[in-house]
Length: 264
Image 1 (cartoon, rainbow, N blue to C red):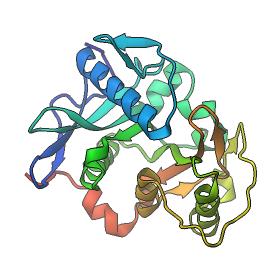
Image 2 (tube, rainbow, N blue to C red):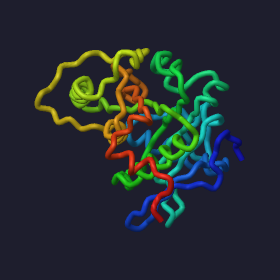
Image 3 (cartoon, rainbow, N blue to C red):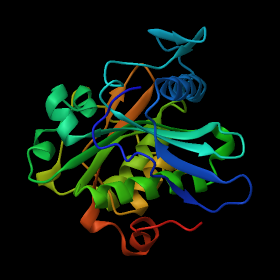
């Protein structure tokens, strides 16, 4: 069993769905963590059409694992009819980051302006949803659990990186960034600096703007994008740094996500 601080043993969050029902909880058993690391590997390879380095195997199969997995919390959404994981995010608290030495986002951005502010922080990463469960319900259950966890443990800020695919040559990315600059950009005091800035590309006024589901969920809740994107050549994506102040969660989502008990 992996020992992690602040794990809410036995606490789960769920929303009613059409069958099957789905439910979120933190993982504590190593075997369960290996299972979601395997899911991470499969989804990332399929989603971004990359071959990830195989640093570890589980039951003979490659998994996505790194040095931060042993210090982070692992939040899974399961299909309770099958017991299989259908959604996942990795959670790093500010207390854990202080002991570990850094946040994962610092691999891509200079984030001192954010993490040196007063308040407690929660970083999420490696978020993935199974292709057959990208209907909104899975990410809603995940967000509900995170929101309640933040509320119960006095976290003020949630942040992480959201990826925009560049497989179309960058047209969608360019248009998304224009929308972000017009509507969702953070104030200057919250800006971060990408370590590998994206090159400016020409805006295509006729291209359809399609926000990735995670980035769309962030912005709908009132999150802000803290500057220009960082290029991740391994995945061929542009990553943006997203910051959510829990006190500024959009009113129409506050009642939905910040509640004490989910419906049975």
